[in-house]
Image (cartoon, rainbow, N blue to C red; front, side, top):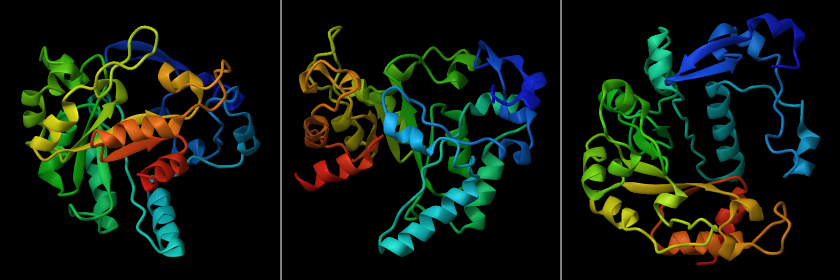
Length: 272
């Protein structure tokens, strides 16, 4: 957006989830304006070859993502699902742009309304997932970071954080409205200050006890993102032993993985 002089006057400062942020905000643009933007590799110094695609692809709509998943499902002879996330739902509700209604409308228009349908809806907040649980019967996933708290808790004065939700009691509460949890990997296998792995927690076992699926994020093959135990060489941008990391997490009972290189996740799972 910063590279588009025609949008320079739209730069603004707003409070998002209690934090002052300066930049450009989607609610200040039409879809047609957003469609003039093109995608770029987020980590160009790390994934240099990916920059060959910079500027070629527009920002897709959710409908286009669904259409792509269905087209690829047909072409490949297997089911490919969609996994949308509601970003900053409390903020968007506060400015009159609640996310739940248009999301549900799009899902219903595509006959994605049941638990067995190939869709998960995820969020770092809880209130919007609880609202969605009353609106539609697709699978819902409560995201949890290794630190902090859902902003809807903070706004409501609820003292609980993600660490509380990741306990056995917290997971039992989440299971009232969600079908799974999407966990920062450090909630499953913590690391020490040097990046070395510590003993696994009981969070996967505790989640499975209350019938919650467990997905983890984010698996990345480069050394700088891996535990020290699985790095190969000193180059932070070189690939380490990502297969070993997958094997560790799959061995603990992980049900699914968010991966920057999904082929590595599939290959590691196939090798078990």
